[in-house]
Image (cartoon, rainbow, N blue to C red):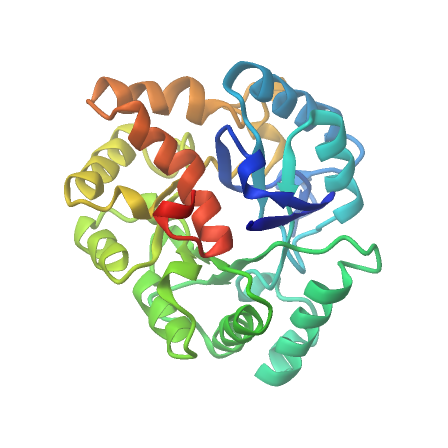
Length: 313
């Protein structure tokens, strides 16, 4: 029986009977200006985050959040454990490095071997001395059409760590650009494409790229649903329907990427529930049936995390 590694320990895949959010942040600090906007604070915002997840569990059966706050992004594994316990929603934590402007000191001068060893140590021993183990590598970042030198090393380290530990890799592409280059770099190590999710592809208005990524066997993440300042949900819907019509529903992942407290419902934002309350009804209205929605929101995230094939989940 396959298991996920969650902040509360191993969880059988069979226990995840409801949908998952494939790319979210529950605790985060990307504030580089001092204005406090790009923050989900472990103290000030934990109650609001927990309440939203608990409500989604009650209303839509939400069972799992893949939380991709990694090194240099203000991660807090103990806070994630508390949120999971209090909300009743399982949480998978991450390790890795975001894109270069957010790399901690020393990352840029470390070798691929040193970076890989750091990741493997965290995967085996736990995050930040807590004993809480990550269940995914992410969100491993780059910006531009090709990763920079430091980003190349962190991507390669993530791939080598994935091969060593059996975890999968979720990436960050800046505005959806660079997914093909990331995939080529990661698979060059021998990492299978189905253990890779290319992030933020709903911000790239290029169905041909989406088809190429999916045809190669990688997961294509439409994971900024509801972020209207970046892209309209109407455009996301058009791009996702194109991917489905091309026969690649088994490679689509969906989420909202809540990445600041202003996106929370309590602050007037769209919240983690926007996917369920707004976008999925639009998909259904466009003719997408419940089996395909279950595939994209439950089975695909589980297959991505575990490497399982369709018949196993």
